Image (cartoon, rainbow, N blue to C red):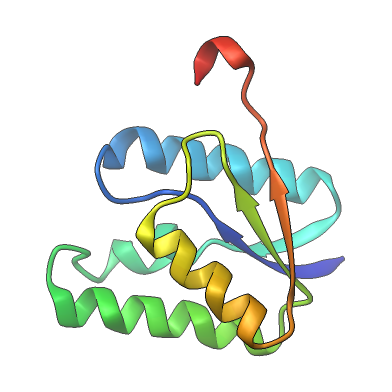
Length: 108
């Protein structure tokens, strides 16, 4: 299995975005990848609306980038500021970035 970081939206429509992130995680697992979906994991104990907690979660997720082989960006709902931050981090650290869509056109 390849170790990967997943980027998908979280803020905004949190309920929809959390469901979508789970779909992305399943898609990644089906591709024989071991995904880190930090925005699903860390928001279970950190409040994404509190800036220092959000930053702590983002930094913890980016730390996983040191061992990840690739960053996968799921773009069905666009690219958020947080996602772009993760993409920029991957590029700065020489990690491959791959873009994917998983939803049917009528769902986007």
